[in-house]
Image (tube, rainbow, N blue to C red; front, side):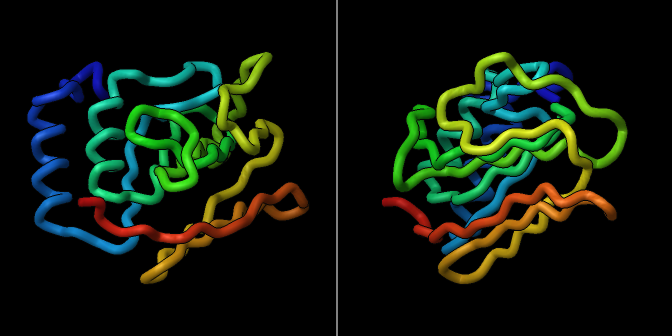
Length: 157
C-alpha cells in the first residue's frame, strides 16, 4: 500500500525491486501487489506504481497480478510507459475472492480485454519456462470464465 510506504522512484521499495530483479533474472516473471497499476474498477489506476511497472518491464516481466478492486479484469500487454504493446506486461486485477463486488467504470480503460463484476472465483496462473497460461475458475454453480496463454520473453538488455 503506497499510502503507508513510498513506492515512487528511488524509494526503498523500488530500489529493492530493481536489485531483486537484477539478482534473479528469469525467463518468465510474475510480480504481485495489492493495488492495480491499471484498472477500470471503482478505485481506478494507481500512478504511484509506475516506477515498479517500468522496472518490471525493463527486466522482461510478463505478468502483474493485483487485487483491491472487487472485480476481474485482464489487460493486453503494456510497455514500460503503459502503452499497449505486443511484448509487454499483462496485468490481471483479481478481487473476486468473495467479499462483495464493486463497480466497473462506465467506460473501460484502454487495453482492457475482459472485465466482469458478477462472478466470484480464483485465477489459476501457470508459469512454464517459455510461456504462461491462465484460467479463471468460477465458484460452484457459475460458468463465467476466462483463459488463455502468453509467451515469455525473458530479461531485456
